Length: 342
Ligand code: PEP
Ligand code: MN
Image (cartoon, rainbow, N blue to C red; front, top):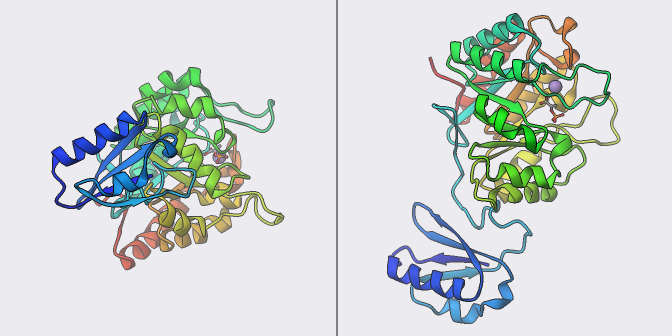
């Protein structure tokens, strides 16, 4: 249940409402929007008489939320959520954020070259895996803590924020020391203990869509993080499994407007994992910006043929620069601004 207060509701009236809700043994998530204050009632709504609440002073409307996610729903939070990542990057507002970097951090020189190209192209956030979730235990697993340190140093040299994956609860504190945005990989989207722990991590979370997850399941995962008190969740569409084998995954571009309709959370597109082949990355990145994505995440590498992971889908540094120029034009056309303005 969501209680929308009148625009002129006084603090005393809202306080009385809150006391009534708590008195029924329910919890409240309050959201103060530009016009209205909205109280999200958390718990078994049968404990509260809807008719009584509707008639209380200061109440404009009582809405029964039909979706199983509440805090993630647009009904509860009509305004777009804007998440601050690092010192200056805002995700979910008029800027279209750009996250670029290698699939995995491989060494000082490689991450330095990527950070330089990312910043030169106008990206705000450096991506790169230090702890990699690989399908094979024999594949490159990442540099771990050393990789985190290298990425942080490279990012700091170019004024970039850092996003990187945290695979386990035990790693949260370590990763949070070096990263500005904590990535939950597709394979962990339904790792509920991890999501719960990230809800208390005090850093924004980048929640990738599970490869076979419905949009509802994805938003329920976001709900796990939000319900622990962390309001800063950014969603990432990274492609889903379909019958199609021509591409690594099927980038579900329709998820962008659907998420925008259902939720207030920012949504980023990751065309690299979405298609898995370099030649298809740029058109899908452009399409994602046109479809209203709040940002793109792109894998880049100074020498993709020699990459330790995901080389076939990594853009060269030059290709990334070209992509940024094109995406900037599309962003401007739809009244937004791409990446960092310099
Ligand atoms: C990644 O971003 O490097 C990654 C492993 O992505 P996903 O979890 O979407 O496969
Ligand atoms: Mn990758």
